Length: 353
Ligand code: ATP
Ligand code: MG
Ligand code: FE
Image (cartoon, rainbow, N blue to C red; front, side):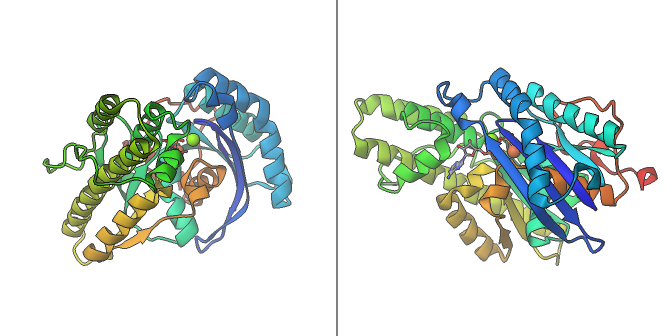
């Protein structure tokens, strides 16, 4: 099947054409992403109303470009998939409404995709990963462990009780005046810093549950920065490196615990840890995860970073997986600003197939 995927839940306007064959293999025919970094740069974060307006301005062109690059006509697609949540509601409405209009005009099925399911299934497109597997989603809006049992079949094992990890990177970057988005800036400057100079807290690590907390760490970083002000370049680099080391520690310990739980629940099952979300680009975290997986005997899967951050191909692919199971959605599907992955309504119902 040929699927058009539309993603507008945050600050990327994205559309892609993905093909899935009978055997379940996927091919990305095009994947067009327009980031709104410039629109939001002056504000130090994403401004929802500006994001929605930019989606309105650019989405049509992005979809046309995705079709052109794939060498197809819109009428060639078998279904239209769009992010229907969770995310900034104005943006979600732009993408979902566009998808509904296309579905109605072309008389093709609409597939309303949970953005998190897009992240969760990407590793099947890129690496053909088989169910079940464990996903660590670390992005600007989410930090969670999710057991992926099948399409639409998820169990959340842990989440953040305050800030998302990408958000923590962004806030630390802001207070060190490194600009937005913060993750890449913090990582770059941390390379010349001493990760051992400051011993920042590793929140919640003494507790057994698989949750995260990053706001206390962020506060510790702020207090340290204030205590040292004015900061020299070396101070900034050392704070960034020490913050990143704390984060990498937390991710490593939690991932080891999550893999232990996986091993206990699926004895004898090959263990796979799939990483998704923009923070997957971070090499310090990647190195820590490699070590954890090597020790645990698990396979670490990190899709190419362009497919870890928000993109249309992941939505098209999630749509393709759902379409293959016979799923489709009503044109009156209501956009959802919040939409946890592990609701029963994510399941592809038997009567759909
Ligand atoms: P969500 O997918 O949860 O709705 P989002 O769209 O903001 O959120 P992504 O686009 O997947 O998330 O990722 C962006 C986040 O990743 C930002 O917070 C950014 O700072 C962070 N990030 C990107 N590169 C790095 C890096 N090298 N190190 C750490 N963080 C990074
Ligand atoms: Mg983004
Ligand atoms: Fe995302």
